[in-house]
Image 1 (spheres, helix red, strand yellow):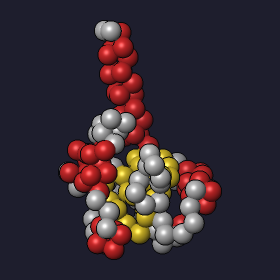
Image 2 (cartoon, rainbow, N blue to C red):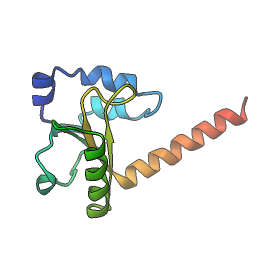
Image 3 (tube, one colour):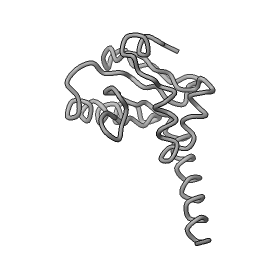
Length: 124
């Protein structure tokens, strides 16, 4: 895993993954299991397959939001096996990122989480 982000941008990724457990319960375990890669975005031409990672967070060091949305859209078309999202801000990542995730694994996790939520609400 590329650790330049923690060193150069002083991001506490442990704290970030702890903070999103409510909305993404599996992320902390994947982070602790070294299954999430964090690396610097260097352009669309340098995107690589996830390999053994379940996600890669590409730290983007430019103006963000609209640009990140456009890039994520292009990447979703170009790499249908992955799901691309972007994040930054009050309820997002501490630095602007593009998130590359294994689409099949993410779909399974969402389905499992929805089943858990449905069971909990039916027991109330």
